[in-house]
Image (cartoon, rainbow, N blue to C red; front, top):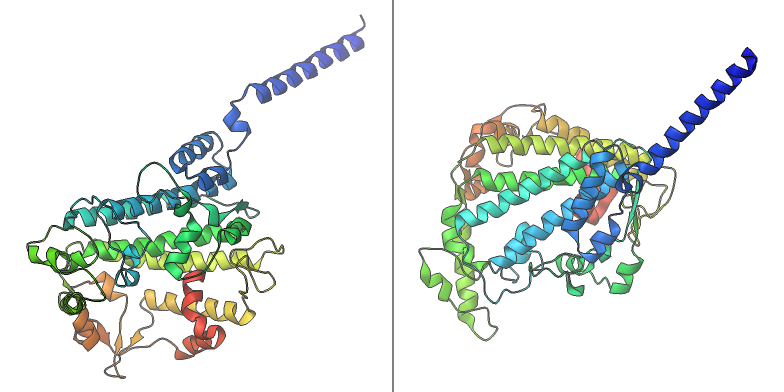
Length: 423
């Protein structure tokens, strides 16, 4: 055999060997590394724990799969929400007009026929578990970098096991929670047709919302509110550990029993009076401030991504050239412009470069940042009066009222709803 033919023969064998190695690598790799599990089947069937494990195991081998990573973050967020619902059910949360005004207890938790007695420490543990669950979601979402991320979810059909009986039933679907919380009239047919194609901007939005909710939780943990709990927790839970046992035997809300209304009014007055909380964990207030700064930073980054989009695919938060998956909702250029301007203004406030106006003396202003870097006892009535602001008063540059006037002009009467939505 000539040297030329020998060289060709050896080259062919080498190429064939490389080909065999490549084919073997493809076919012998683990199945879960080849096919990414979709989050939608786990969410719509209520198998959240199973879904978290499946997507988490897959990411161990494919950590750069941002679509799966976002799906895992959604499942973890929903599982944390489910855990919160189950805790409230476990302790027999009461559904009444009062509970509709409190963020953590306005969720549509069914009545528990055999509730456990809630202690103050038990309530604090509920808050801490919620804080930890949110931190877990953030850890999952933070590495996402894919600018072309797209994940379609039938959000309204997501199921949560409210009462912890191991079954996510039809009445425990997310569209029903939405109706209960917002007063909307979404039907099951509407929910079946409601599809959202989440993208990178939405992943940043969800990450920002974990900071919003985390800030609320940290604030609740920073102060000692046990005296308020002892006197007013019976308004929201069926059985509470309180030295005032007579509170547990007061007449239930009955349209024919005026005493129930009178007692509730008295209890509410007492709640305002007792909203004076000693500071027990000051470092949490600094965490609250950092959460707020993160919200602003992520909102700015989220809108940068949203404004760069050129498609129009079942958008959660659309840019002015897109349509929202939410019917009859329109985002305008004026809204986006005023929103971005407000983010800049809030950044100045959180960095201590601008102050809030003081309602009792226009020559003075409130250094908002120092409320968190130099926290004191929280006293609701003193803040309403103004005396609680005294340690934080100074003469300085106040926030530009034109920025806020622009927002009211752009959003009109729907400003609050858009703020909650835009994050």
